[in-house]
Amino acid sequence: MPNLESNFAGIKSPNPFWLASAPPTNTGYQVMNAFKAGWGGAVWKTLGQPIVNVSSRYGALSYKSTRMMGLNNIELITDRSLEVNLKEMKEVKEKFPNHALIASMMFEKKEEWHDCIKRCEDIGVDGFELNYGCPHGMCERGMGSAVGQNPDVCEKITSWVTEKATKPVIVKLTPNISDITKPALAAQRGGANAVSLINTINSVTGINLDTMDPNPTVSGLSTHGGYCGPAVKPIALNMVSELTNHPDFKLPISGIGGVETWQDAVEFFLMGASTVQVCTAVMHYGFRIVTDLIEGTSGYLDSHKMHSVGELCGITAKKLKKWEELDLNYKVIAHIDPEKCIGCQLCYIACEDGAHQSISVIPGQRVPMIKEDHCVGCNLCSLVCPVDTCISMVKIETGKSKITWKDHPANPLAKVKAF
Image (cartoon, rainbow, N blue to C red; front, top):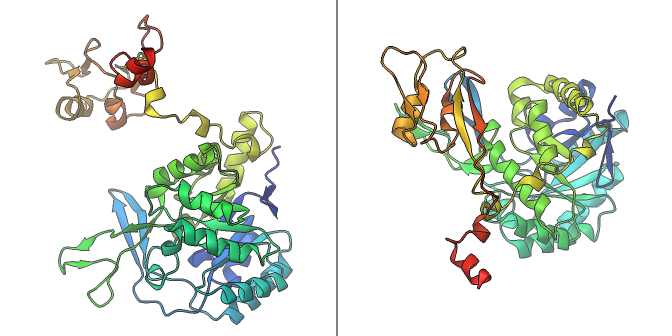
């Protein structure tokens, strides 16, 4: 049986599945219910000077039969006093001493950071997460993503915290930036013990075509919000991998962004995260999803004869290379299983109109035909096919040796090297 116990930058928890700083961690009542359900840790909803929130706060992107594929929020940090939050956090830690309780924080002044650090450590929190990611409301006040987008400020404020804190410090990064490695390295220089990513992405999820109001609507108006949920997972995985593969970045990573199932969590581990944080899926389905995370991940480790999540960390990230390092002579073509084909011809339409005209439809025949000599192996047909495994991509031996763009004769830089 695999051991799912986690030690993330010195923060211990029964498993690597944490609640992200968000509405599900707004109160002690919620966090205690989460721990009872099986969650290993929780990052408390961000502490700071209490703000006033608006109504309504959430908008969603649904796609066909999938509800809330993406969630947009314009909610800000805690609207409750620091005293109330600290009282409830203390109660949670006393009742669940072996679970990870992380204080998320966001302040303007150095003295405010130091005061909150001391008060949080006095009640026994296990660590801190610095919210440099919130893309709405708080950034207009010089906090949140305004910090995460400026490496110099990121490093400076992180150093304010690390000079005072005796517990591990995690920096939460914004994805609203062209190069995620710059603020990550700044956090590392500032003395951070770990990073978490991604926070939410700037977005507008839709418009009510009857009223022409953007959503969510506040008396006919709205603002750009933070996008999260299953739709952001590909972006999050890429950014996690960028940090894992950066030669100068050495901190542990907590992965955030679209984690809903154990498969999602394992993907983050394979990209280099050693814990994952969850928000939107809990808002959609409740705390109960942690059972799937625990059981599914344990089963996956068992099936690969592994004993801990640490054995997964970074395996797939190492397989991500620059385009110029890929083998230009590797060849696959599509193959249609006639026993599984339902004759919908979606593959033909997709290839004919949107790709490389490599599929034919023969009059009187149900199954389309692959033009093998013309197929470029782009995968589109297998992706649009509604029947699992009906279309597979089959490797073809070309008899040619491996060659990459770095060494290709058509590459002018390669010619310079050869000369």
